[in-house]
Length: 489
Image (tube, rainbow, N blue to C red; front, side, top):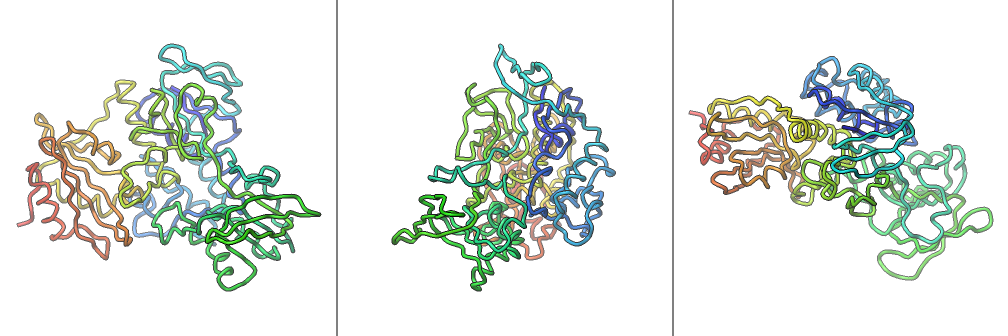
């Protein structure tokens, strides 16, 4: 099989495929590992944290909950690597530190990549995909696309195609003593504003919808608190304007630009002038010619429509890894999206994906263990309290136990919750961490017995500790139809 891409999604997928004994090739047009982190973020510091000191040892699985930037590994020596490259000035790694971390993981884990190999075209021949590359043809029945959202996206605004995109931004000093207009109010827009804040005379950020901050939406999709300073300067009238307005036209004017905007709240259009305009309007999926073969996508990001196991809904045998896995939406309970757009979420998708491919396409059975009935409740409560997969992919990934007549209670591992909910022939339980509209985290238990699915919500814990007698009684009661849980005496 073939994996395309040497960013964290491709590297993580290759790592787990190798550990499962699945032969594959990793192709990348880059000359070194790292993907987008070789170029972005422009102003150098990431929005996801790694805490060098945490309640869990750095080499343990549980440390992953406090380290959102390292790839995960089975070997202790390959875990939590990014912290070793951080200089201690911030627990948000610098871009260069992240790039070194990914290169170090590639070397340590012996992830083999064919660099400088450009994917040029794709065709179908029977049950195989034939990839034409700059190094020749590759034929494979299974293809994993890990190319990310790397193609600049510009909405159809007159004149926007004539201004630099985020990917083409100049050095910070180019904005010294200038009025800068930024199209877009998500992370990239606020990152730009934060980066040039000490230099620009005035900064205006505009888009039709209000800025949504992660601390309010409880998801990584909102603007991270790291970029709160431009918004604070806006509130304090400190030379930054954040406008809820649609951009109707951008035109060259004298040595700068004239921008016509219309307030979202209604009213007449306004004209603004700026020395520089930047389109912080995001990126689209890089999918080559797969749409011409029948790949279905959705949204302006051109995300591939996917099954719960990240397989194309329309091209059998084509899977996705990395940021592209956000196309598998999950159940989106309370409207909360997955964390699959970021490394700390999709690294777990990669482990599950590799196992699924190994079993479904290569006949490799991954061993599973059985549990005693008396161990089911404490084991599930321990996972709910500590498991990084459940905390970082809330409402999306779940620890699953099945009840198999000839074996008893089988630990099926961490699986997509959506898959368990749709598996009408599986008898068992899936536990996950959910987040309600008030921002409270609590355990959710889904039990399937005799083709009937039931949902049970356990109590909220202010200290996020679910290994209590009260939670044990609640969980045992939920598991009663399966006869696998016993309440404490």
